[in-house]
Image (cartoon, rainbow, N blue to C red; front, side, top):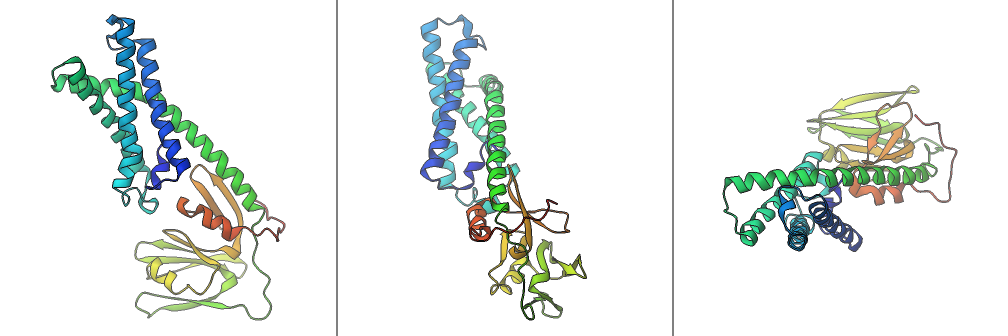
Length: 298
């Protein structure tokens, strides 16, 4: 997605450069669009005046977008944190950037051309800005979506070759205990049979193998409380705000534009991995000295 790189409010140099290039792309598009097509009555201007005005509108666009893409995430890091970022926030941020560019254009037109700052000017440039922005926004959204899908799919294929299936146990397998919030309900599972746990409001669904088929049990607890009781098991991993998984039982890893997904044998839904954990999950799953035969794709 277009602005999902904002999920890290303090970007590295490569990410910063990408956002600067995004702002420059929009500014260049505005300049060329106004210069070539001369919409909104600009055909009446002389070429020199038109080129100067188109250039200045492009500069306004770049400055405003740099503020929205770089400055705003630094001022509001908690708002742009990965853990709380959603598709709706991304959409609202895109709309906010477009509105900010429209506001910049209105103020520039008022001071540069001396037009009266009234409701008519606001409506006019609101419509103009959205009309010009719709094409480059669509192009960048589709381009980024395809790039992310390709990148995650390729990396997921490499990780998939390194996934280790359930470990062969000697002797009695260790057990893990699941307890309810009030401690009145408990049940035990062998570590090797546990697949994953999923948060469901005030409950947690525990998925596991029972008699050669997947089963589930629901306990009244928060996922955070459950996680605290599983700290001693290094292969039990919270890969998402709503999931804890047993990495030993992951049989397949897939990837798309939204990131990585973990698959378990005999279980229909794939478990998502939070994007801010991509590097961490890569290091945990990778087994360079152990390349087992990969199970068939689910």
